[in-house]
Structures are given as structure tokens and as C-alpha cells.
Image 1 (cartoon, rainbow over the protein chains, first blue to last red):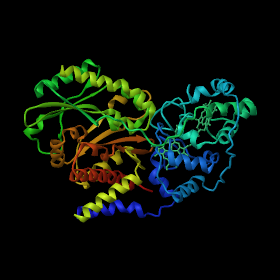
Image 2: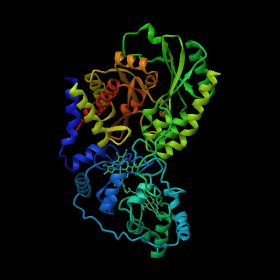
Image 3: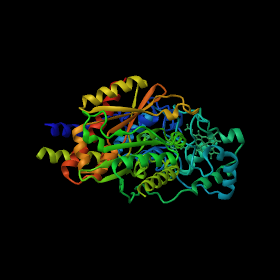
Image 4: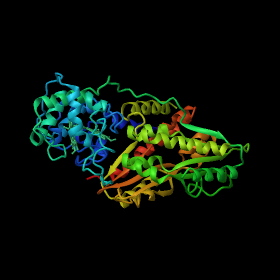
Length: 339
Length: 152
């Protein structure tokens, strides 16, 4: 009975005839907002989309932004077409020549550093954090997108990039550089060539992490000693340590056996605040914890999650870079307990 | 039995076609934090899970970048099931109880969770995989139902 119900649940999406709005609501609204005002993702106003060719939108939807939060979507051609029609809301699709633009990369780099770097970053990596996130007061209304992201470079034609530099994007901080700074055609071409020089072979397949999901360490101490050493060690590593919990606290009648599975929770506020600015979804990884378990044979282990896997789920390179140190610190902290 | 195999098949199919690998599960709820929180609590219970406790993320409160303190994590689970699963596979313990992060964003709320199918590599029998698939479907269903309660 239970299983039949599950079967029906999983088959429903296979046979839906959703329109563009529904496809948007199902897949995009979580990041781009109910009225496309932006959130974790960029605003997708009609005036923004007016700059985007169908090819740009198709490729963006299919491949997303690897390492920059947006996933790729396995939607059918028909679904993608409906979605694009919905996003355009009546505005005609621009067409760009797909011929590459020739320019002087060195000269382009110079212009980039003068005019663009302060927003799009030293290495074109985009602003800290993404989109237009309402939870944070950032220094900008919208975090400037990455121009070196392989998903972006694969989707955007040279002509489209040129068009945006020249005309800007209406009602955003991306101003018209032809109007405001008298960019010449040559300057713009050089700039486009410089941006294009960041493109690598596009590889939408993700590399897998060849590491376990969890690390299990045998403790040489008994349960109580392991827990208290763990707390001491966490404090020594500048974590704030919370009161212990039993693993199933609040889930069932308190049971003697439950005292053999203890969760030690700790946080480093400074780290957490940095992470939150990069990706507000951080909470799914919190709090940092180590679980201490004594089995029926009286053996005690410390189990921690391999946060590398958890981080991968954010599809956020900035997050990965900042987390390496934290992961290493946790491992050292545990090793000290085992010693 | 046949139904079970079909279910497994259908789930495998649906997870490969529709969700992208292990992407985080996210839904945007068209109401403010406090309503979302209540709806979540109710919906979790309606799915026969027990809300266990909440974790406030007070680390963000004094931070000048943060405009709201509406950021919490709700932990929930099923005692017997999770107890027997973690006994069999100790590695699973670090993922228990299950949790959903709730954060206010302007007039809306985001609810976010790690997809339980990421735990599949930790178990080694079809039966136990099915349990994890069920958590996955329940998690998705909980998030969707909370969202749908406030749809325009």
C-alpha cells in the first residue's frame, strides 16, 4: 500500500504537462524569486532577458553555472522553449552573430582592470556571494556575475557580451560603457577578447570526490572521556562548544541506551559569518558536530561527516575555497583526542 | 514485491531525470518566517516524523551584515527507524536527526535541506536503500507541501 502510493508520487512528474510558469515555479523560483526579482540568483526581469539570445538562455538552463550556485537542468526541448517564452514575456528574442570577435587580449586586460575589476573581481570571478539576496546588506544591490564562469562563457556569444558592455543592462549597476565612458569599438573588442580568453574546454560532467562520506575513528578512551576530550579539543581550536545532546533527543522516550550516542556540537562564529556571506544556505551544514558512539561491544568511535561532500552540494567554488582550512582544523582537532 | 521493484525503478528514473545529482533541496514559501515555521512543524508531523528540537543560529545576530534573526534549523526524525539504521550503519548517525533550514528572506522564507539520497553509499541492501528513498520522497513532499500552503 505504502509502496503503491510512493509509486504514484514518483510517476506524477513524468506525466505533467506544465506550462512555462509552472516550469519556472518548480525549478527556478527558489533562486530567482516569485516575481523574478532575484535572490540567490540574478534578477531575470524582462529588460535583462531582452539582452539574451535563445542560445544563451538554452545553454544557461541546460548547464547552469558550474561552481557558481546555479545547477544545470535536464528539461526537454519543449520545456526549455516554454520556459524561455515565459521569461521573455512578449519581448522579442535578440539575435547575435556567433562569429568570434578579434581583439588584443593585453589591451582588453588593461581596460578590464580600469573599469570592470572593482565589480566583477580580480579574476572575473564575480562578487562575493551571488544574486540579490535580501538577507544581507551587501555593498551592492546585486552581486556582479562571474564573467569567467565556464557556464557563462559557453552560453554567451562574443556579440552578446559586446552588446551588454556597450548598452549596459537597464535599471542595473551594469551601465552603458559607450554612453558613460565613450568606449570605442576597438576597446570593446579587446575587452571581449580578454573575457573570452578565460574559456576552457567545456565539461559539464562533474568530477566525483574519491573520499568517504564519513570518517570513523576508533577512540582509545571510554565514552565519557572521549566526549570530554573532544569538548576540550574543540575549545582549544577556537570553536564555541554547545551543550551535548543525545543522538535521538526529543525523538522518543528517553532510554538508557541513548546515552551511548552523544552529539558534540561546536561552531566558529567568525568562519560561519564569512560563509554566510558567500552562501546563505550554509545552515544545512550546521552545526559542526562530532558524534560519539559506544557499540554493544563497548568500543567507542568518533564519527564526523566529510564536509567536502556537503560543500559540493552548494555548487559554490568560493565556499569550497574557504572551507578547506576549516575541514583540516576539524581533523586535527579529532586527532588530538585520539592521541 | 512487484510494486516494490517498480517503485525502486520509478524512483531511480525520477531522480536521474529530474533532480540534478545531489543538489540541495530548496523551496521558497510565500509567507513570513513564523507562518512557515508553524506550517513546517505541522507538515513534518503529518508525514509521521517527530520534530525533535530547533537550533537557532544566533551567531548571525550581532553581525552587522545580517538583517534578520530569522534563521533556524529544525531537526526531526523517526526514533525506531533511525535507531535501527544507525545501529546497522554507524556512519549514518552523523546525519541524524534529519534537518531543514528555515531562513527568512524579505517577505518570503526559504526552506532548505540536504537530499537524503546522498546517504545511499552508506547502506548496502536494497531494503535499506528503499528506506532512504522514502526519506528522500518524504523530504521533498514536506518541502513542497509547506510551499503549496502559501501559493497564490
